[in-house]
Image (tube, rainbow, N blue to C red; front, top):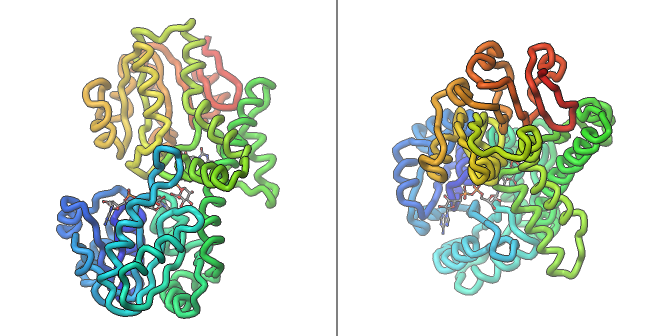
Length: 438
Ligand SMILES: NC(=O)C1=CN([C@@H]2O[C@H](COP(=O)(O)OP(=O)(O)OC[C@H]3O[C@@H](n4cnc5c(N)ncnc54)[C@H](O)[C@@H]3O)[C@@H](O)[C@H]2O)C=CC1
Ligand SMILES: O=C(O)[C@H]1O[C@H](OP(=O)(O)OP(=O)(O)OC[C@H]2O[C@@H](n3ccc(=O)[nH]c3=O)[C@H](O)[C@@H]2O)[C@H](O)[C@@H](O)[C@@H]1O
């Protein structure tokens, strides 16, 4: 089948590449000329494990190509995916300007029946808006379908190729058949394609992300209680996660959720609630708690250093919002760096993948180091912000000799507290007992 994907960000690239991998011919369209030039030269603009191999194979086999020209890109396409940004507008609601612009451009250039698919995360009612926008100038029949994406960065290929479920919102039998055929290879393992109406599909996406953000936030609050009561959040996590009604995943306490989606989607759902005059109190709390959680370790550092961080040097391990990505959107590390600089501290950083993206933001106000050990050389303490595997088993001897004093603020609970006590570290983590290295 011939498919067009409009927007070659994370979702567009994974969607396009995976549909090519299952034998379709995919043309990806983007207005960013530099990006399209790179893609044409087989340069992958994002770091996503496993995607590059599929990407190169499908380009070589002639199933995946790129253009900046929408009309050329959608030629003969039976399905057009919109994988466009939906960033927060000034009031926190999802800004639909990118989607509606492409919808209005599509109207006059559709030449036969086409299924247009909202792959972006969009508020309830967007499929209707996209339909109305296209209909203004369309001369041929078409359907607009909602097909939200649930992939996670870092494991995006696996999530896309072997989804837990595929959600498709459509009230058209014709569109349903086309989508069913397209997704057949992805659900051979028996996971379902769940058909529903457009509005329910749109809300399903916000409900999923908001539920997961709430689950994490709940554990962060339990961690805060653990600290006050002397309990251990890792034990509590194991204790409740083994209950299959709760489940083991997304129960890890830390320095708050970040990324390009949880923060914006929780905010957008709260805004949608406001618009229909519903007071979604839970979401407001989730956002407030998450905000406080992000810089929690700085408060602990301030208390440890008798109120002032001025003149101190801190090493930071991890900049990306989570491991296996170079994405720094809403990464807790960024807020911590800003706060440390504002308090007069010096900052040295290392991340296996995200350094270039952070250079664009902080320039020479912080020191970028060649590896994790260089980042702690001469530092007063280490802050751990992202749980990259390389940080899990450091050479503690080396760490001890490089740090000015043996102090670690760990936002991801990477180390065993007893082991840190045995090694003589002063060790602060989340929801567990503090280790006083004296
Ligand atoms: N990043 C993720 O892991 C996930 C994102 N989503 C949702 O998918 C949507 C897209 O997200 P990302 O891929 O992260 O966005 P992104 O910001 O990385 O990429 C969007 C792309 O669209 C392009 N674009 C903008 N206007 C265009 C136009 N008129 N014509 C052609 N291309 C245009 C941009 O140049 C950019 O390359 C968002 O709604 C997001 O919430 C959903 C699931 C996962
Ligand atoms: O809509 C989206 O864009 C995507 O958002 C998330 O995926 P992603 O943002 O890639 O990353 P997650 O693995 O969900 O992690 C999000 C944040 O939560 C944090 N987190 C996650 C799990 C956990 O137990 N604790 C925790 O603090 C991570 O550190 C990270 O900052 C969802 O998991 C995807 O299903 C969804 O498609």
